[in-house]
Length: 344
Ligand SMILES: [Zn+2]
Image (tube, rainbow, N blue to C red):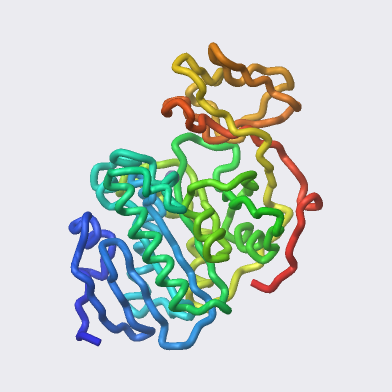
């Protein structure tokens, strides 16, 4: 163990943005454990106490989604300066420092479509970075052993406003069911809604769930703002619940009734150049429509709303042909889910 090379001011974010492509590995000790800077934006901390909980927190997978990056950087500062106890194994990932510096969602390709080795088909900075993140997560979970609790919260902010400001995407469960302890944790974290994904994807959270059996979520925490313009008080609940998790290895138990559950009814796909979503530019995520409304149309197809209240989420027609332009989601009830009554 080398003597301590702290980041200036314990500021992992500043150090990462100053070294956006790569940096020399470093190891140093803090009161609560050992810190391993494995690569730029990839920081593993092993607590002195033995812990069965391996927690991955990723931020900035979309480079311009700065709020969660600042939130986690502040939390990390407190750990590095011995003000926050550490009772879990922790891997903090700043996903895409190059695009964070550029203030862009991504440089060439949406990185949250490049996991589960989808990066193999691309030659761009995001492909290289997605591979490095996969390797870091694999190493982290393997070092923690198979029997422990594996968690991954991938924190984002959204392009547009939302009827439910904070919500999580639960990766497709392949019929395995949903963790009550996790849903309660999300409720305690101030989330308003959970969207149950309906198929395999190449997102980061699906990858860690499917490959490593982690409880993984894409967590949307409100609207995107540039560095320095985030009101971190909007993140009070998740700040509290994550700090509690890190410092006690315990998952807070929120009220399941405060969370609205949605299932995916359909994925909208751009099928021709003249494809249009028939919604205003300011339509919020989770905006519902009446049965029969023509939500999307092109020379080749149209999509009519099937049930009153079916809602749109992540609408974006500005994608290549063959890619997703949005999801149609439908409210469902907790009673309809297969809930796993496990301990967190
Ligand atoms: Zn995002």
